[in-house]
Image (cartoon, rainbow, N blue to C red):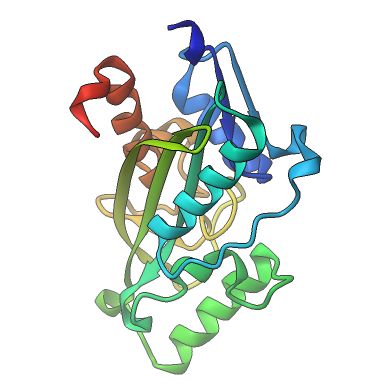
Length: 207
């Protein structure tokens, strides 16, 4: 499996890359992201779904780096039922194009407060779609979801993004409060990467 010793994650988000590194363990000798390839620049996420954005990012990076490199993209976000699935594909830019995680969380809480969403009406999920390419050839895609609800206020210091607001189903703490090992065992990204690891063992299982 020599060609799989190296994997490029099609993101500049170092938090996401580090999470993926931990989840994949020692499968790859070298895992890099777009911080190592500044010449590629920022890729506009113009798709209307996580699938479209994941494919767009993976293929753009694949074309830039050539046929010999495996590229794994990840497009993921938070879907809140009371907000008709928002922020969805705009999770990272929910409060504007130059959004910060803090501003996104504040906007989410404000919008839920504005419609008086309480208790069971705060159901939500994190969704992740990953696409694997080599050059301009798509090899497979992988999906992961974790159900939960939105807390009334931010709790916890760990994680990133909306982690301090998301309470996964079956738990009474947010992702930001849970030990990282627990989060990494149940998260949407963990579910998608489990499918990816299964594919690595048997590529014919998912075309």
